[in-house]
Length: 69
Image (cartoon, rainbow, N blue to C red; front, side, top):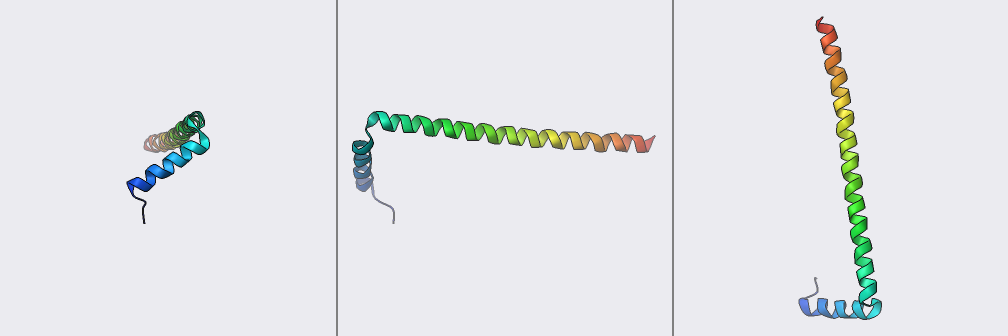
């Protein structure tokens, strides 16, 4: 069962009191940087896979051209 809006407000106030505004800002910034890094790594991985696929495809085409001659 999900907490209602009143319960969420109470939880947020308690978290704010425990960690403080500056600490929560730092945690949010660190989390944002981690997400950016993860997305960048995923994009680089996908680009690398696409590049390898292009190389394999080029080799296949080159082989087909040699066979046609």
